[in-house]
Image (cartoon, rainbow, N blue to C red; front, side, top):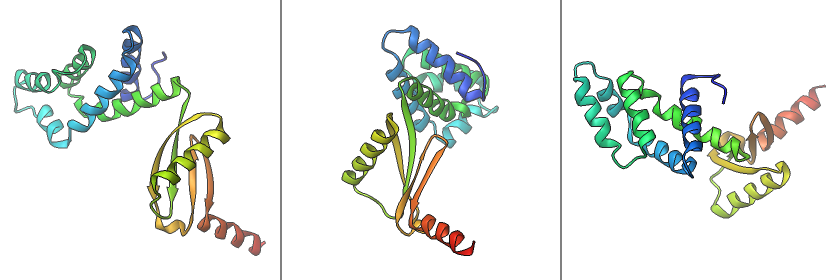
Length: 177
């Protein structure tokens, strides 16, 4: 894979290359990176970056926190601690997830509605998106009361504004011209 882009992306690309070399390691690596990214909060990262704490102590703490993780993930965390780049871990996890999704033909979508919607409606939205896009969709749902009604859907760089606020804005432009 090409080494373009940000530092988290380059680390994620390297991890994906390692995962592809290992048998059936792509999803376990994703799970491991996601788990560690959420476990290493701001306080933990600050402690692992504190120059007042001896490097041996920081290495030992990182090793203790990653004992149940795959060897390649433990090596990554050790490297990040030693190079004072442990703060990149959440970004690496996100970039790795995006790379895996893209490799598997899964598109990321952001669905914003005016009110919280239940699981059945979420499932309906996803089914419609998958049908119209021809791709599998991994969606995140958000609430924005300013929409008044309807929804906005962003898949990749494409935005569909089916919100009441968007329709009113479009009507205002039409009436003004």
